[in-house]
Image 1 (spheres, rainbow, N blue to C red):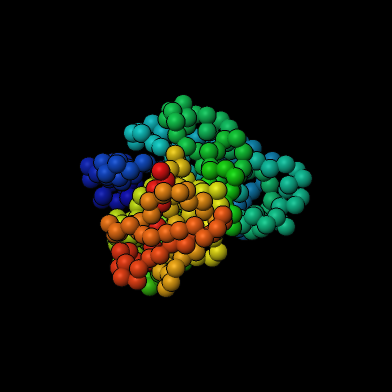
Image 2 (cartoon, rainbow, N blue to C red):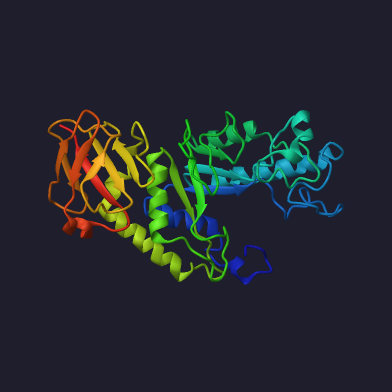
Length: 340
């Protein structure tokens, strides 16, 4: 759309990346710049001299180092432009994990590796764009920026991004599940969307395990989302309005939850704890994996009423939630425990 053949290229707001960044920044959002390390429009990545067999570089880099050098230079210039011309950037999110430096032994095992993107390589080879230098240059231009190098563990990125799944027990380092609201990353007419219950449950599950939730919605040709996506976001927003304090600025508790349908979070100072219930209890709720101190105040978010509770023994606590409090929330109900 910025090419001279497109009439919109002459529009004063044709730099849509800058317009999008400014729009989100004006609403108080952090700016995450997504950049795909493989670029299939570039002749120095998918060289027209050779057939395209998969999504990897289609020529032998060791035989044509000068062509690969052009691609590395192109990548550096693209990232440098993003870091220089678009204001403050908070996250550089580098996709395409197969574009990375690998050893000769890794090349031999490439076709049998479990990593998605590796098993499609018919011409396995090291695709080194020198991420160490790229990250260093980005951080010089944008001090404090977080760098993600998709599926490439190492010292040059700040957190990892499991895709389309939630680690069973969380991860021992900063992480973020990236997941689609529907099935596809890009727009598909009449795609099947996850229910509001499922989306909110996944949010709670991820946060209870110490992670962040990156939720993808693919825009259609006119820049709008499917109407169902707006409906889901309204549901999530309504739930957050009532229960957001159990999500924002919270941390993982000693254990992430109890059973399949209960999840825990707590504030940084550990004085406030939260119990998330996927199902509204039909009788007394019994909790054995969260310690509730004597004289703690227990309430249900969305209601001003306090809840009755008692310690049954050294391990188990009983909390009574009257049936008429079910309308305090929807999807997931959150008990707040304020420690003395």
